[in-house]
Length: 206
Ligand code: 5GP
Image (cartoon, rainbow, N blue to C red; front, side, top):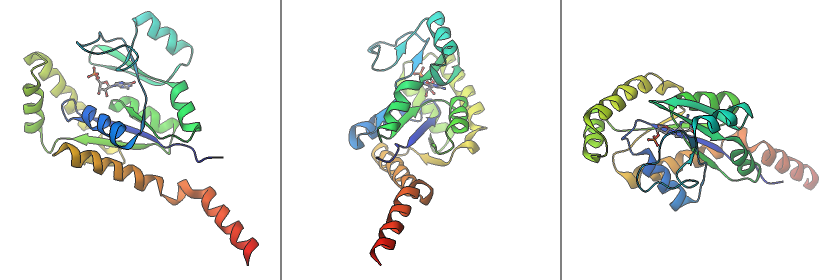
């Protein structure tokens, strides 16, 4: 039987570049990515089933009722949730799965899956975050302020994370997060079967 896949949760302030980091991890290192469901309207260019599963409030409620989510949370004015089936199947097949979710959801995942690695991606300071959010040009000043206020709330929960990675340069950040995941997978707690097999083999040998 193959080893179970690692569950990796990546969060970060809006504007810290976590979406680009996750995209890089999937493209460069082949991680499996969970696609969330949301009640938010698609942004231009977003595709249903690729970026998100776009749901009505009623559809989202039904999924909650049927225990279809590992976790779900409200973010600003919308609901977001991680479909359970895909994540369970990928991990069972030995594939490492990334969830790109916000802080409340991350805390719920850690309770259900204590072995999950929680990684937080941040800019080096708030000034840089503000510049990146303003520079995107996709949000109004009021929306940017809302996201900064939300980031201030999220900053209080950074202590829940196992690893904090500063995104100064995108490629370096992607590689650092990948190294963190690789180290996590080498922990002795994750190698119980390998250790036991080695010891049994040695016992048979000597
Ligand atoms: P956006 O609207 O910018 O796509 O996402 C807003 C926030 O919701 C981001 O912080 C994103 O990581 C988070 N998010 C996306 N999917 C999920 C999910 O399934 N669960 C939770 N808890 N947060 C999510």
